[in-house]
Image 1: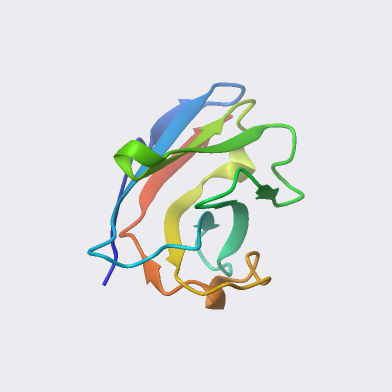
Image 2: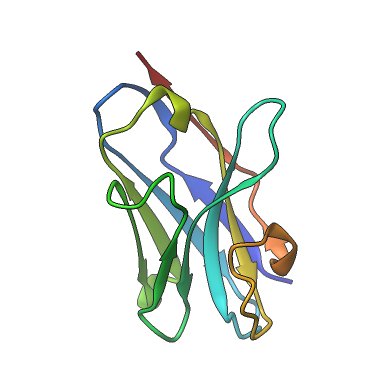
Length: 125
């Protein structure tokens, strides 16, 4: 079991910046990668960004490239999502996910074994 706790969501105006955090408790498990997904009402869960746990390789969804940055702090078992130039269409619940598998499908929600409870991000116009 891997426990994930997100924080940092909130209400901001368009153009603002916000940073989300996800703290992982691995309980002895070896995490392969972690990611951020988001889900707006009535829509499917959308890939935002992923990062390898033992590498520095990062991956981004097309809608956030150049605006969002994913990073990690291994000593604290925490990943971050720095979001800038936020738009109303970024409004969603943001979920943190972790996978133990060596998978190439990091942009697919089904590749992730564990999820946090989600944190709401609302961007007003």
